[in-house]
Length: 193
Image: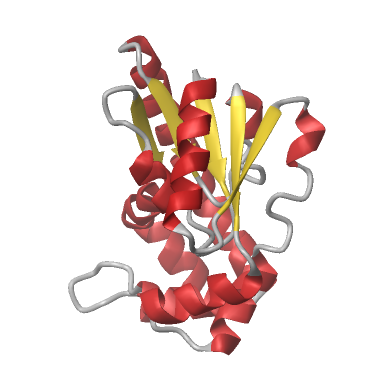
């Protein structure tokens, strides 16, 4: 079984993923794969964005690349064209491996839909939280400004809008900050599966 886990920035996808029992679930963190995808596509990134996006050691400086792409839809599309195919292939490979071992694969991806994962999922879990809660989390966790969070929000405005159009079961988890409430929702999800 493959479950898609999605939601906007700071909605709580990682919180939900961490609550899933590791003896039954294998969580595939597509964001983490994105970091590897950046390093695996060095030449294409330099060609698209120039040498200024790299640190002294040759690794990608996400603090430079992030604001560059989140403030420019065309640059974001270019980055996605470079990294998403690699990330999708790796995530699906890990999901199939988990299934072969009798585990439930959970593809944790904000861009679950736009990357084309939904058609591979048996079930989709959509984690949501109010804008103000997510903004506060982003300011604390990522140390960004409200303006940068708003730019990130704009780049993710389509997340969740058409998940129900695929004919897949979608379970919504509301993560408004109450740990007991989210824990009960995750327990319900596990019992349902």
